[in-house]
Image (cartoon, rainbow, N blue to C red; front, side):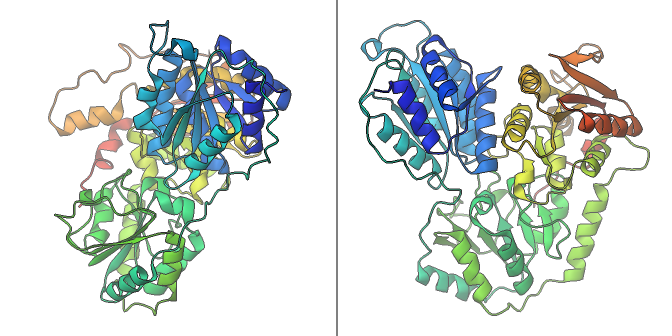
Length: 541
């Protein structure tokens, strides 16, 4: 008879789970042995939060949930940060934790906390494993995590059940979680009403968000924009849904030069939101006072006292987009040449000035060297706002960004996970020195696994985004300097070599060397951050 640990691992593998990320505890040893025997890869991380971010990145790249683990108290609380990432970035993942034996639940026990209370508000479902229901609980967890809107599930595992033998279940292998779960089509009457309203518009725009990345065909989106001659704005995590050089591309909301993007959407007389999830950016923060037709799996989260004309079309947004394509071409009032001029002007401002070495130059040179099918994972900070507008993204899975959760520290573990999931692709990470300090310990993981990831650290020795926000409010600089004096560049960080660059030429050569290496390399780019002030934190309306 299998043990609980063996059956849990067997069922996870049957669902297609490939990785578990975490830091083991004593009671976890039975599960590690089962993973070793059954070929489920347990990745030892340096911080449980990293394990959560790695699981999130894996699911976004493969469409199959990954798992992460934390022990009884501190491991679980560390893990919760990564779980919040999955919740707010709308990503399926399985959080596994150890809890005291059932007979000690409610007692005062070393390290123990009430995990159900901890995970209930940050997961779609939280439960405790029962030795008599291993398959059923795993199956239900995998179903719930992948259903719209996707997000994490949590299974607490009593410490004393892993080694217990249980009967063979004889259960059939489950269906593997698919990248696209079947959704119901929108109500035909809702679609018809939306079509009638749409025909009244003369200057509508398409606002494309995170749900569209999961549900919508990019080629169809482009065809609809072209047929009806509608500008398209994207949320940051929807980058790659429409090419930056497309005739009807208008830019990315919320990030750098958002005032330039507003020059287009402020003229709209209607907004058609396609899979728009306000977890990235609320409608009220940018939308003009015009009718909204919302095509999504859930109703629009918007202040309906402020926006009186909101029409929800709930169901598969792909079906809704197909309906829009079937309608006669709209009599569009948009001037394509004026849009092209605004787009060209905005993109020109994102080009680095000759001879400079600021964040624009660092990103531009990296984009030249990272292949089109390469993956870039970015952290959170001032550089993220620039990446959101400036980084040319051929497809959504070529850029790993957190904008729902927006947790500093995401970039390094996401890049590591990307290389594990797609070992044949070039992978880079862009992080500030503040974000890198949070996850520097994961360099040990990259080195241990011999993962050829290029970690670009934009070193300006400050929390640049908060520094800039202080300046804009007229406050004195306070508690944003990372070092008392300039920090010397080390030769290695946990065995990973470091290449320093103080100029654009040095940086270009460092990247060439780093991408040619057969293991991880850190490129420490000492940039001039002053150009952020003219590019980010602009008005949105």
